Length: 247
Ligand SMILES: NC(=O)c1ccc[n+]([C@@H]2O[C@H](COP(=O)([O-])OP(=O)(O)OC[C@H]3O[C@@H](n4cnc5c(N)ncnc54)[C@H](O)[C@@H]3O)[C@@H](O)[C@H]2O)c1
Image (tube, rainbow, N blue to C red; front, side, top):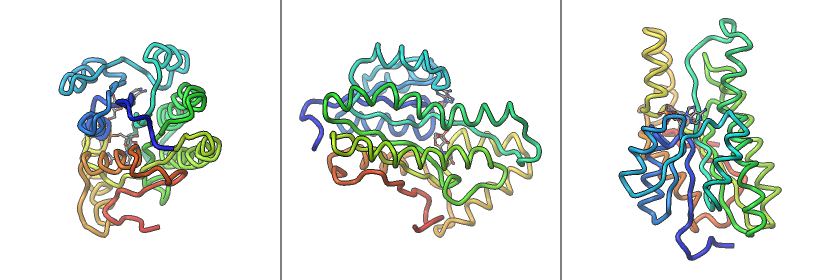
């Protein structure tokens, strides 16, 4: 069922930077009222102020805070689970604190935010969730083993939620970006020196297009999945990766 003709309410987690900020801007340009939610409150306010949206400070890893924030925000028609983080580290050089941190933000955060919005969507008989996974979750990323596991988890979670919501008007899809020029990727490169530069170049070489992507290119795919042009699409993961994978 198409979304309501009224202006839909969208919430973008991690909307202060990179792909999330580009998505917030794009959804606002598409006519949605957008709430920018981020750990970085100042950044969220800056982005929201560009288009007259709202901003809220949110740590997606804190399930109590997630419940509280979603309760205060009110009905959400479009949830973009975008908040994520990682750095380059070979698995043998990581420990359980690293695993927890990566799984918390990239997987548990998606689960917590979805748990907060889904009952309302099911009750209203409409809603769209778009999760930002990664090609890492489909093909595996060197120096990102736990991140790859978290993103593969997001892809499986997307399918299950799609099945649970499909007959009650709720769609759930994911995008799987390849290397995208954002502070996340370039911060990981900067932190890892020559190795980071080699890892980034390896990802770029793995794309058919031989280039990295821009945040706006991912936002376009997210906006499509969130729109009424995608009303018969659910449970899918769309690679946005210049042909890094083609399946
Ligand atoms: N950049 C890439 O190459 C790439 C590739 C594949 C997937 N992704 C995914 O895209 C998404 C966005 O990443 P990006 O590249 O735009 O990164 P980014 O660092 O530019 O933006 C991430 C945003 O998430 C916020 N954030 C981090 N932890 C948070 C938390 N606990 N609660 C709320 N907000 C939090 C940060 O403050 C930041 O504003 C992530 O899920 C990332 O894993 C990125």
